[in-house]
Image (cartoon, rainbow, N blue to C red; front, side):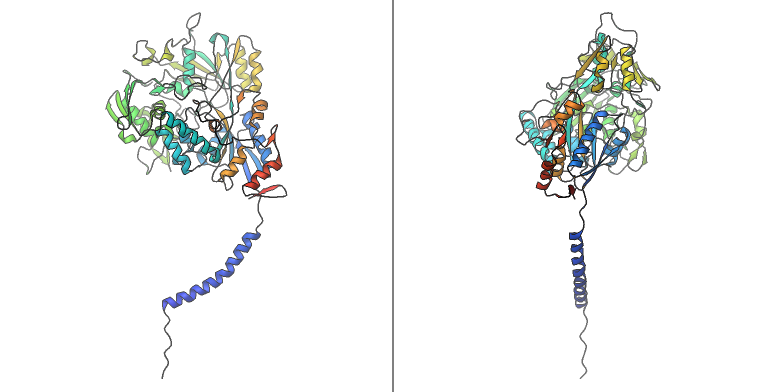
Length: 595
């Protein structure tokens, strides 16, 4: 009888192939794990970016101490000095860095931490989460503080700062005092920085009456006025300038940062009246002042306000799938629950929906600069991938609605002329801001641009300028105090020097590593030696995260230990630091910290 060979089924064929495959992979697997176990560990490497010492001596000194202490801890730390424009591009736009040291402009209110740290902003530009930080616990607390009020909000913020002590992607080094100089006849108690502080100077009464000349303001640096775009991060560095050209709905008055900073009342500015209603979700009904005009004579109305919030949300105005948000004021714009639900009632009235957001947080949205739709709508044109003309425009002839309009500029000066048609220049306007009681005692403003701080202070000493706008370095204090007819002014500030970490870096993604690195700066030594005492070190949990200038919270005396420097006089104890790394799972080889 003929024998029939067994059929070869697809299942048996796959089973055979599988067996061969597993046998072959078994050898590969052994070789793979053998190779992994025998691979030579590499030393942890970090590059620190900051501006050169000529641009910011303090940042350079902080970087130097950090680098030396990292090296003593066994980390291959190097420094990459780059220009301010390059630093902002690398950090705030491209995310191309390991560690950076920079002077942050300051957190004006607790809610500003939402934009700085919430995962919603990991893919956006500017000071919206440049660390790529994504943490569910932090998100929940950041969202809760927006909707809470009173005691509940304080408790939430305290819990947030405790949580950030263990997870945050940045740390605060010091809060520099702002140092400036002014002619004695100005009687200043603090150096001006914000637009409202220059308005305060312009509103002073003088013994000899108003001046028939502009207020002369000294600034120093190169290309200060090349970029007059109010919605980008690499805007001009002339202090207060854009705030004088572009008005918001409401302004925060000058306040003592150690007073009730967060609860300070915003004064209506372009708005004549703001009515709040929280019966079914928080809303603000804004009534604009009558007769508002842009600097080019066009009428400013409620449509411009509606446009501004939609434009900050998406500068392409819907032409791009997703959005192309403006990098500045983005977090404040998100306080609006839904820009499509903004209701323009008539030319002067509109309703802004805030949903579950509490009023202490929502009021920040009213401080964004209002933009003229007829100027910025054409700039919604998409010119590259996720890039609109609005985000690249220099805006060299800015058209705003401020008390001053752009005059002319050159290499050594920039002139702002009085905008005579501004309704707030009239003294009989309803609900006129208190800051304008004696406005204005000068005929316009002229910024005199010096090449360096020394030249600016020489101009102050010889009476060419009235007041300095740029902060004066601590080592230049004697230049002011030795000058005749000049007063030195100082004040605490909300700005702070910070060290930031890129969460995408293999080691910096570990919160334990970030905690250790944040301890490697002797803050007390920095304040004493680098600032000559003209600064404050963070001593409370909120202060470690840029919020020293806000209203004090009852719970800021945290139960979690604050950063403790493992050494003295700026130098670390290498053995103590190495033990810290060993405790979180790292190893050393001949003094080198291994990956």
